[in-house]
Length: 109
Image 1 (cartoon, rainbow, N blue to C red):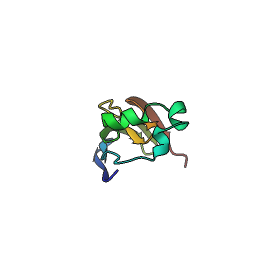
Image 2: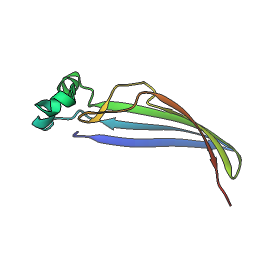
Image 3: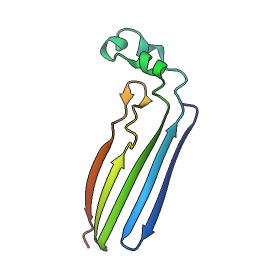
Image 4: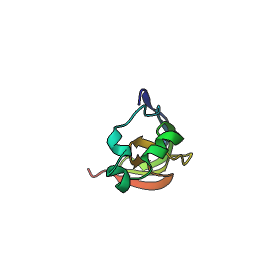
């Protein structure tokens, strides 16, 4: 890709915090011929059509909300790939679809 950009904004208020992360990548301009010719194209089909469909360029967003009731304990809800966009970071490597995770963090002292 010619351009890429990552950013993250976070707000904290008392025991709550929230954040928005984003990742931009322009389309991949060219790939090695090996990815679109035999034998690799037989075992990993669709790289050429993915390039033509433009899924190598993307703007992906993530959202998180956290609550910290104690200094050693935190609960976090994370939404990854909010728009559920189909994207490819590099040839033959599709990014994961939208996911929702719940995380509990405890710090031993």
